[in-house]
Amino acid sequence: MIRLIALLVLLSPVLPAAELDLGARVKPLPAANRFAEKDFFVWCGAPVKGPDGKYHLFYSRWPVKVGFAPGWAIHSEIAYAVSNKPAGPYQHVNVALPKRGINPATGQKYWDADVTHNSNVFFHHGKYHLYYMGNHGDGKSYPMHRNNQRIGVAIAENPAGPWKRLDQPIVDISSDQTSFDSLCVTNPAACIRPDGGVVLIYKAVQFIKGKEMGGNVRYGVALADRPDGPYRKTPGRIFEAEKPGKHWMVAEDPFIWFSKKYGNRYYAATRDVVGTFTGSAGGICLFQSDDGVNWKAAPHPKILENSFNLADGGKSSSNIERPALLIEDDEPTYLFGATDGYKKRGKISTNVQIPLIP
Image 1 (cartoon, rainbow, N blue to C red):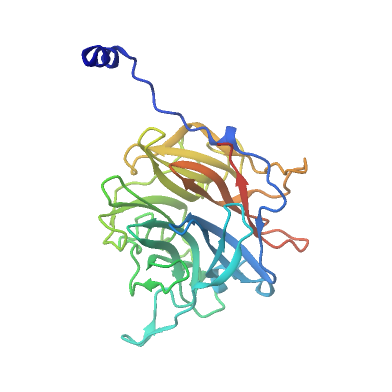
Image 2: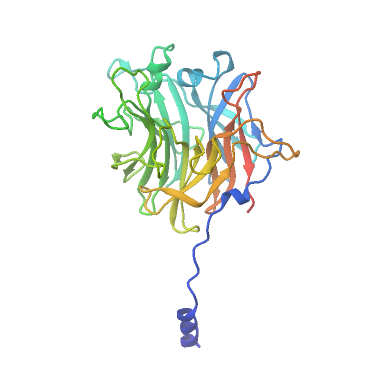
């Protein structure tokens, strides 16, 4: 009997890995699946399920009175909310990463003294690892704050804190001014590798002499053996179009994860800025990678167009930015994202939780 079973196993065809098509699984957004805070713009939105069975959301916020932009770059802070259900309602708990001002050891401002933004989080070995962009400046100048953007990680055993923040960024700018990441680095997205190390993707801008805001916006990869680093940048850029164009930015806002279920590979959900990969400018695109370093558009690249369906039968009047997926048991269950940014007529940005078909 054992020999027969072994023979059948040998003769059975090898089934291909399940192919991920998130676009086919997106459901309309119920009206209740929206997190907002009175008098604040809500942006980003990094969800994670904790061992307590609750759902924890780390998001950026800044006062409506300072305006959406450049308010985000000068006044943002990362806050924390919690829910008993993945779709909410989420309740604000505290500010996870507030301003921290002067480093007493140096008498100078910390690298993230004034702003925290672009939250990205995972739970690993009993600790929450919160990746983010931080900056410092004079509280007025957008170019100063924007060009001082750097990437860090904060670590805590409890999602409500306290958080241990590092004195130095984990990803800094390149000293080579011809490098694509020589002016600022931001937009971190990180996940644990199968070997226990970390893949981190980051957005960057090149220093250009005479241009205060620098050159094109592009993405790179850094690797580390542990979440707090040190991180080693890999050569080259990612999320590039097959035929290079003149666009100053092609992709933005990645969320990455490793999936055993779907091919033992990495995936990234990104904003398709000009429609290069999905055909929908401002849509959400799916990339995949076998090693976390070399990326290509997935066989089913389109997750969302530049609008989304509402449960009442209508359509959104804005697109999704800062996409993030809630992953449970290696299965994406909800697409989180920020919406209604840069909008006039009094709109205030919020985070939505779009359900995905199991």
